[in-house]
Image (cartoon, rainbow, N blue to C red):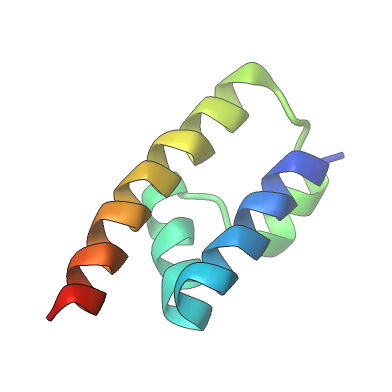
Length: 65
């Protein structure tokens, strides 16, 4: 359960460390431990994909400064 969701947390960590993971939790309203227990449903995956798009924007801008 939550295999794909946990991968998104790994991607966030690579993108911006703990700060990005915390931001992902805020955007999705799903913590890392909770993501591990949830199903990889279409709704959950969509929520994480949209949050990751936002993270990429935010962290690209942060690195461009």
